[in-house]
Length: 225
Image (cartoon, rainbow, N blue to C red):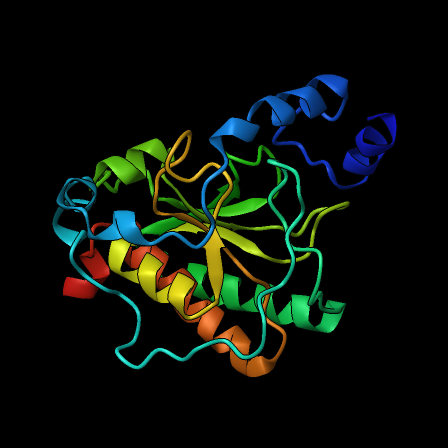
């Protein structure tokens, strides 16, 4: 157990205390682990209703590709929730950061960049203060739309975000991501981990996924306008 604790410390982030108490806490959360590829909840009327008027909508392009190759492997810990294979270099990380910055600029009417309220460090896309939370998912997410894992230790540029139920199905079935470890328990069913892109073409798709998250979390405002 001591060896595992030291292994966890190497990847631990600020979402949990970076000490033995944080390690034990994530162990205690193990019974709440989600089934990463389970999409059955996204067709349930009660779950769709939680998402308001945008619950039945897809904000991804009609033609949505499948990710090539197998899925990456994921850390065994409940937190942090990160991938451990198919990692990319600083050049690809820069493209991801630029894509997120461009989205923040393009959607500045509805979103802002601020410190992640969920990770407690790093930048996140968050609903502007003048935007009303459109559904219970946005409220449970504390208005946070998405954040990129760019920090030290476990910064591999995967992304946590919330999508509409229909888009959750597309992303999971297309092998672009999976449910976050606490999805459906402490976090909404719609909270996903999106894998870091490996090519320029994949950056484009991941950017589309993040934009779909923006549109979902604003209640479809920009989809309608």
